[in-house]
Amino acid sequence: MNTNIYQSINKPAIDSIVPCSLRWQGKVYALVGLTGLLLAVIIFATTLGSVHISFHTCFEVLASKLPFLHIAPSWPETFNIIILDIRLPRILLAGLVGAALAVAGATYQGLFRNPLADPYLLGIASGAGLGATVGFLIPFPLQWMNFGAIPIFAFAGGLGAVAVVYSVARVGKTLPATTLILAGVALGAFLSSITSYLMTICGEELHGIVFWLMGGLSLTKWAEVWTVLPCVMVGVIIIWLHARPLNVMQLDEEQAQQLGINVERVKLILLGAATLITSVAVCFTGLIGFVGILVPHAVRLIWGPDHRFLLPLSTLVGGIFLILADTLAHTLLPPTEIPVGVITAFCGAPFFLYLLRRKKGLAFF
Amino acid sequence: MVELKDVSLGYDHRAILSNINLKAVPGEMLGLIGPNGSGKSTLIKGITRLISIFSGHIFVDGRDIKNIKREELARLIAVVPQNPVLPEAFTAFEVVLMGRTPHLGFLRYEGERDMTIAWQAMRATETQFFAERRVGELSGGERQGVVIARALTQQPKVLLLDEPTAQLDINHQVEILDLVKNLCLEQNLTVIAALHDLNLAAQYCDWLVMLDGGQIYTKGIPQEVLTVQNIKEVYGAEVCVYPHPVNKLPATLIMAGEGKRKRTYIQR
Figure (cartoon, chains in turn green, yellow):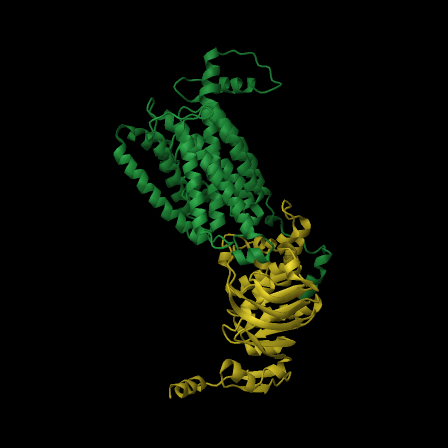
């Protein structure tokens, strides 16, 4: 009788070995492999640009900056400036922003159990867009810690929009997902209309605004990397730590509560962390679309929906993807720089369609 | 053990259940019966603190649930909901393993022991054959088995079931309830089940509580509760009740045309 087997639950029986294929060693290899790939992509990206520098030299220049390694410089001094002060900050910022957008997208999708959710869902994009437009239009210069008016206004606009959406959508002590999404869409439309109006009356500033809205990483300095890095790291670690509760919340909220999850608290923490990293990323680089919605889905299609792997893998893939996209953006048509958002959508969407096609008919979310 | 003392509960400020007194003891199955909207599901949600209690007290293992943390409550009570939403892309085993959530701290991941417990719960419910299939590909009965396995993985003292057999064929109904009954006896679980089917309720439950309009109409052993008179009063249905030919428990028989006759009577 099968119930006898159940009786022995408290003292594990020998005959109850879990099949090996149910474990997850395979995904650990993916994590290690992608970390290696990320490093390789960073070095590869430093070789590309208007000045040709060989892979070997790039590796040596980067390695010479590591502690305990003494490599005698066999390259011109200008290479140091090109690689370390021009190319590297831009690559690192691209990696950070890509990682942040991808992990925020995975979080929003998991939190709302909605495959269409993306990092800009709660009005961040439209708030930041409006903020940046205002930043372009104000006549007097504003400075704070080397940063101009645009990032500050974009950051404030993004967070402000989320705060409004959040307070509108709140019902008593709870935060229903549908009201939150609807409020985000409604406020987004409202703010976008203001942005469009400002753009029609702004005149010669139009080009800058449009370029910001399409997203770009040109002229990145170390100061920006050092501002984004800690925020993104804190946010990403908070999100990673909540992977298991996020898995349980893929059941409905009642079941999650009945399994002991404090749903409202987890929701609040994850929303806060994802919103923080998105707005920090957005305020320096503008709106880079498609990374947040596409990377998590691609990872889900390949490695499955378990957030304990989905979140770290999305982080790595997002970083790699945006570094490659940004490298393409500034090397494809030199000296013209293509907005990176154009590249992410152009390369990402067909790949996504291919993945969808390959796994057609199979539930993946 | 679950004990409700003068409990009233509901949504916002509207009470759905009032003055509920009942007691469920380990090793016995208590069945909640009553027409649609009589408050069976609400009562089950109330016991897991999903709904605010207006007055009265709910005791689990002698402790007031108001003073038990959600995580600890999930170690005491496991619920099999009526139409559970399951993430389609997760495998059956992954869903069952979620039952370990209340036993793991915030940062701990499932270890060997948790895997073993989940696997044994799957064997007990005979769901191990599709452990690696995605939940989205499973049939209604298989999904129900997975949810029960998840509940067992919680290693609870109390098992609450909300219409566990509502969408199953007759063979699966018997299979699932046989399983629950056996677990109840051998694990000494306290089982409270909301049941639609009066015959299943009579066959499996040691005690029945008949709810009507948010209050307890009557309670007792099946022979006392399932009478022609009670069913007519609460459900408004004309039925015949006979002792089951094998085990003498009350069997409720319906008759075609009775509902129609009643409706024409009301129209006049």
